Image 1 (tube, rainbow, N blue to C red):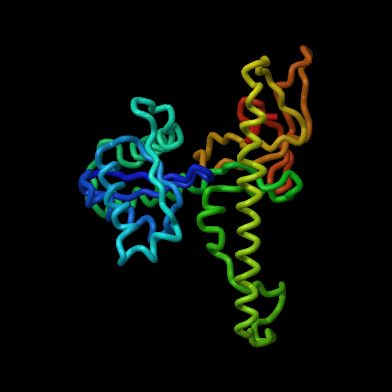
Image 2 (cartoon, rainbow, N blue to C red; image 1 turned 90 degrees about the vertical axis):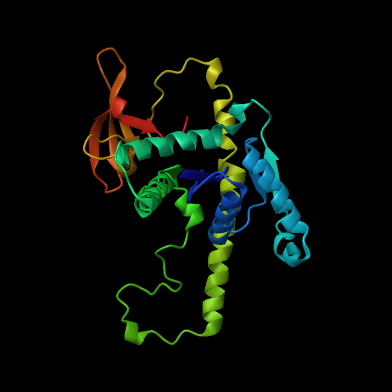
Length: 283
């Protein structure tokens, strides 16, 4: 069997499909399953594998067919392939492939699993990758909440449509009208749209601008108070490492910083070696 990987260029979220072979039919069926869950994308990037190129022709014919025109025409799906023999153009999904392989080596190793066993493991791998921290929401946030790919893919998971006030008895709540429900859904959709716009316009471009001159200067320790860092823990795996905010630098007799005081999300302030801290952004 084979694993078909879909990844988002903006949020680095992944979607894994288990297919029996590398035929065009298997790819088309997997792509339909992907669109049923995540809707039809506007652009589809891939390498120059013959399966993808053949599937592109089939999808293009389907988009202009009379029976599918109304469904596909608003999306205007475009398939783009990377230049020949230029794998560095596919670094976004190649890096995801390495991460997935590492997870499979740890989960399966040399063991043998059946179809549903592998399908379940892939769902665990997909969830683990999609909850990894991308960055923090705000340095002023006392709980140090993080943004993950799931913040975009499943923003409303685990949240009710109407949030009642604390200590409010359910029996005392007035009946909710249809207009209240519709207005709540509209408000949530507007908030999510604004959130995605800010992410695309403000954040995604900023790391590139900050890193442009990185190679022109000496990259030494530049940790400073206020930095948000990921705290390595020998007792927990990487997805469960906690976030912290650097509060104080501790210098040695040589005036070099080797330890810092970090405030964690629960409010506790502990001292950590800088080798156990991983900045989420380049200052």
